[in-house]
Image (cartoon, rainbow, N blue to C red):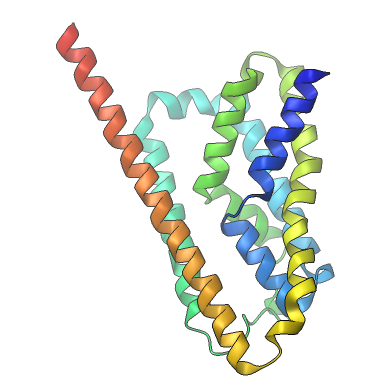
Length: 213
């Protein structure tokens, strides 16, 4: 029971903290309301859970053996997140999420597979709870994460709907865009720094191992 609680708290902490998916969810909530964000939130939840299952079934070991592969995936995702930040920050109105332009299920699912934070959270959870060695435990962890992730990401849509009345004027919308777009770009740069730091650490470990052998 204590391990289940630990899994829930881990999932909640990683799901509700700021990240690219949550920032975009906030934007949808501000622009269109919480209900319009449900498809995107659902896609992000399913996409993350699928990534967790795939990594737990063995892909994490491959990534661990080929650290460069994770770096390549991270850099591709970071570039995409930075691009989204530029697009939103450069808009003079609220992010154009009206009608068919609202990011949907597929957008949310795909973004998680390009989200370095999601990869890091999956690998950390797999290592922390040892779910790769037990299929039942992996399924339990994934099931709990499915529920908690929807709640954690969805909370940002509710927050967006709650504060949307403050962004009715064009000036406030522009400020909101600058803040959201700038936030995404800062997140991308932080993720890039983490990727660089991890690569430097891995190279140092390899060098130390070679010199001691």
